Length: 89
Image (cartoon, rainbow, N blue to C red; front, side, top):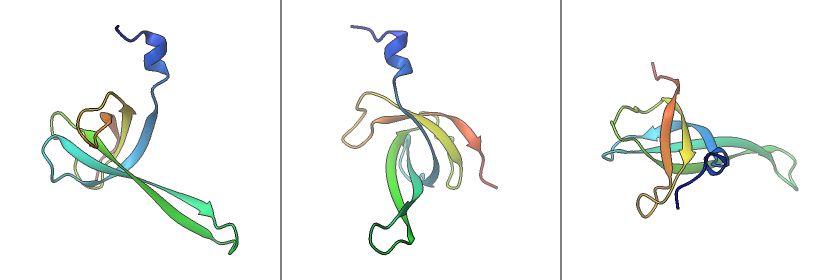
């Protein structure tokens, strides 16, 4: 069964910073967010890491990229590179 346009529209997209580009056709992207600690009350940084498929090996460490959900491509890789938001200096 082929996915319809409605199915593709429901796919999640994220924006994050590339933290590793050492693998072939794969980059590791980190998303950082601030969450208020329930008892202490101060804000704590929480990180989530995603393995993203980068077919042309064009992403470098420090780049901010957009990526979208896709079918499983490997054991850990379930995201696909869409485009650059900001290139690293």
